[in-house]
Image (cartoon, rainbow, N blue to C red):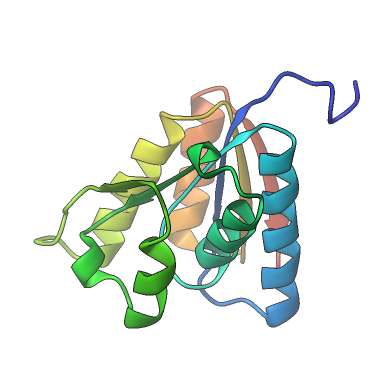
Length: 150
């Protein structure tokens, strides 16, 4: 089935904060293409993979097909991402400010998985939180695609 002719899907894209410029370009292009072909993209707000997803989706000029879910509030996000996040129309702040970021991220990732049928993840083999999320996605019966960066 052609990618353009398939039924639009809800797709979560997650990944590491630690990634090269080339990695970010590839993620941005992927997000752009997914939104252009009518898919709804979900992600979080960390620097690296997530900001690349957001940039690509916004570039496709269909803001209704991008949802960003933050584990905490926008005030807890790095300064360099706040400007980008201010352009996102569908921004959900879970507000888990009182727990460590690792716990808040796990809760956020679980929430993201409830929104989609598919997940694409960019991770290193020592990315424990992402590996847990990958397993959760598989247990939910999602189509999970993992691109290992190491």
